[in-house]
Length: 118
Image (cartoon, rainbow, N blue to C red; front, side):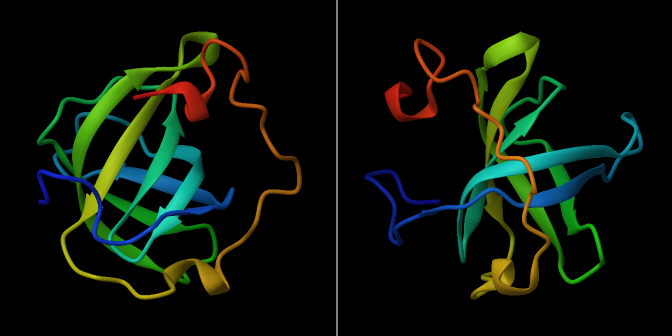
């Protein structure tokens, strides 16, 4: 994990996916990404996750499935959370065959806006 910024720029892209808890404590959840890169993603979720927790993120049509580690969890709109995921392996262009969301969520633009998040 880099301590002084990202090595690769993230691309703003809303993709439908599933979060799977590898330890079986949570049910599989349908989520959407806010931005993506070959090394990770920022995801909107209904559940609070702890830094360091491990999970898997998978595409709706099984076009990708990768292990990830939660880097941060920030409060989001409507009682949800934004989590930063760092993939355990580099996944170049994993989003290209992904299912885009037909409805783009607002992510609570304003005080909860991801662009205003640290």
